[in-house]
Length: 496
Image (cartoon, rainbow, N blue to C red; front, side, top):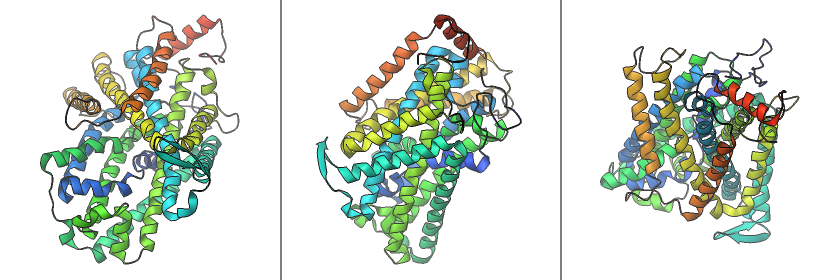
């Protein structure tokens, strides 16, 4: 496949991307993507729905789901350490049309998260600066939009875009610094439990029965979306492929530990009967545990840090997916052009950042629809990757797999793949109005999802036919696109 060479001695990949990420950088990209703001605002609901131990068990069970998906990704990224992750796996195992469909789907999911973060930043700052909302503009979907509030999110989008255009190393340094601050907040929470907790507050351990635990379980997989950002930047990682695969699994384990810590510490600080009175229960919990409201502000700052790590990681992931699709001639070629100095997919980064900059002017009401539209798109990609894992195990048993999950034989890996397929299919079914526990996305979200996927189908239909899945599928596709357009050079892949 194009770009499979390791790159030259100067640390440049075959595709022209700079190999600048070490083990910690890559790990923090994946872990940071999974830690947004939900751990501050949603914890109270989890404990009220299932009880302290019930919520923790539900999270552990949901984490197991993501571990299986993560294992599938870990083998594939070690075998194909190329930018674009899913794009490469699907292209090799299922061909160009499925590859562009799945890659377009998860790109939309990533972009929806980036747009959401641009709205959550000013929403979070409201807790610290209540006067942020000035100059009323309009009301969208029941949400008032103020100029100063919206501009705060837009400025954040410009800054995040600038950081990512400057290079993956700059973006990873920012990511590492912010994740370290998050981990420091975690240490403060542990310290708070040691010096100021009241074990009786954790009662009841279980409440709501099975429906209560299911209510928490339904939300878990979607909070863990983000470990798959590590494969997107695989061509910019300067570590062995086997180690990249391990980092995927480690990032999921870190996220499981983080969320379990948040539930435990919050329940030990505030009685369950009082949880409903706290909007930011984790922040209030640390303030109670350490005896001063300043610690609540520290946690809110940690929440803001979580927003930025998630934003940064998904911006990296979406831009690399666009770069890979454009490089293969699937979408307009200008999205695959690298910055001449920084060697980043600058056009893709700028496009995504423009969408993020517009998002705050839509208000917090409409942006929920955008996120709901992106969530099932991500699960579609997870399902397809799980299927292609099994296909490649059967069709290419001798393919080099530096990290072979399930042991040396085929049985263990096949079982892991089958479980991943089943679990991701069930996850997608939770979005459909089929069960009492299904998530109600709302018709606006389904329309947005449908429009985005129709665009992807349009790109899919326009691809040249007759190209089969395989190791050389990308080269065949690039050659076919060039023949169609009568070109022999590297420029002009796709329709720019």
